[in-house]
Image 1 (cartoon, rainbow, N blue to C red):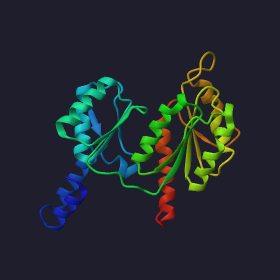
Image 2 (cartoon, helix red, strand yellow):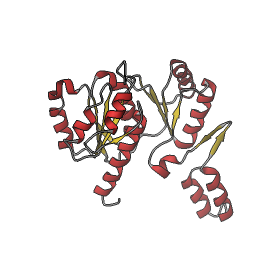
Image 3 (cartoon, rainbow, N blue to C red):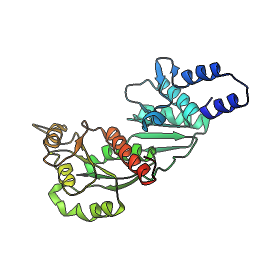
Image 4 (cartoon, helix red, strand yellow):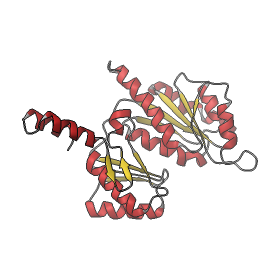
Length: 259
């Protein structure tokens, strides 16, 4: 039972205030075996609960996704392996669920209702094509949170001229935040942060090799930036996209006069 139905029943005298309180307490947590679904996370924090496929048994994943869809109407699954993908396809076929698969991001969005657009805008930039997988994960979650996303991929500092035309377009579009994903020496986020007045979130990516490889040099470089930027963990596209979307959505509400 959703909140609207609950309040309608109370209004019509079908249930009393004690029952309303009990239902509200139950509504905030759905226990499914060992999984405790936070079905009101999006309403509480603005960030939907994502289901991390990595490390889960396929049977558990299918069951959790089913219950999430039943209660919320949308579900996003991240870090989907081939085995998890096949299990989700079975569920989709069985229940005729509309869905979107992003092979690059390794995410699956399943839904019975459409996304509500918020008016938030953000940009996502990568230094190289090796960083696109992480950037796409950020894009998927930002769009799931209702934002319009502008992308610029492969704008690395070795050919810095590639950055400026599309960055100018992002500025002209009035993006509220920018996510910049970079591996190796991780320079690009600091450069972008020195050129724009929007908040910049740097994402170190686990590319590179030798000493400082696997994203470590990129992480340290971003943490030592002279430009002002926030930094998330290595390969944390989801966190960067969600953080940027929170900023963008709050700015969008302010534009509408209801911050």
